[in-house]
Length: 185
Image 1 (cartoon, helix red, strand yellow):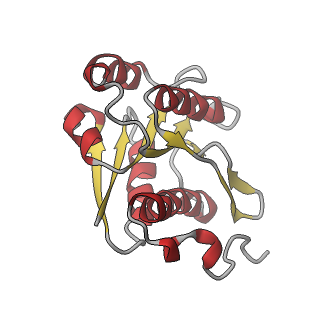
Image 2: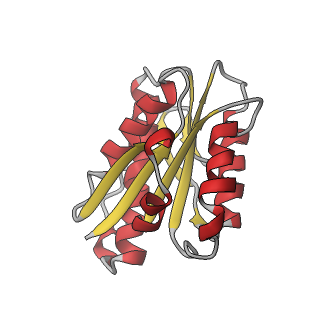
Image 3: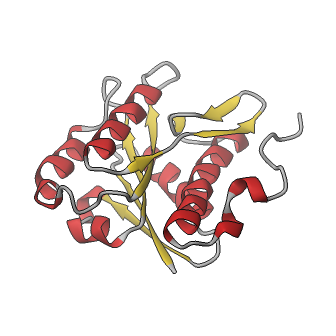
């Protein structure tokens, strides 16, 4: 059994909806326990518990939220070097397209890299024009099937990597599965 934490900040509820979808995707992989935590209820123990972390934040001027940054600066700083080698990814929502969601994901990934997390992007398409190279992104609530699929794909891929690299379950490697990477158009 391996552990995945979906940790998020959400002001409007849109990133929370993304987080629930990411957690749903992670639960698709057998032998993965998933915790879904809003930043306000999260502790350092949650991060120390997990093997894999999906980190989500609303986009604030193209960056992660100040609350998320504060969590890593204050709550996690005493635990720096204790999370080396854990696997992580990012997701973000903003008020509209072009709001800097991918930049916010990159800022989340930068924080994770500084703590020693192994981060990844996803090359799979969630729809005809929907990718998640830097993480899952949405403008406001993830209403479309493609945006919801992107969140689920991100969570599933995190759980797959955790199963392979932390659990030694090589049969969960995405390249060993039937090719479902490009949806029919």
